[in-house]
Image (cartoon, rainbow, N blue to C red; front, side, top):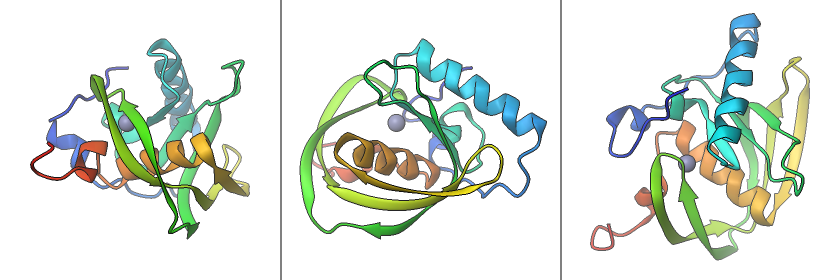
Length: 150
Ligand SMILES: [Zn+2]
């Protein structure tokens, strides 16, 4: 699938929650996983493939073969402790920036079968989750920079 690239305005659309995980949505999710792997990314949001629904996929496993599917994520906790991290984005190729991310966040979400689950995330997982939820909210990592820096 084609990934939208900065400064495409469609990257700023706020995604809507999913009501029904039908076969069309499932097929889309598998395409997202393939797209993420074919671009060697660790996360991909539906927003980036121009589908404005609240889904993202990620894989931060060492073996890079354990995709996580996150549907309708919601923060239940975001730490106010921040860490400076280096971050890139498939929508901004060959660009990396140092930004601040919360060191810990907890999200509620549902899986492919509609079952609720919770992730208590630290480190790279927490960073990745924040990055992808930002996408669903129409935000890019460049939005965390000052105007001058941009
Ligand atoms: Zn991104």
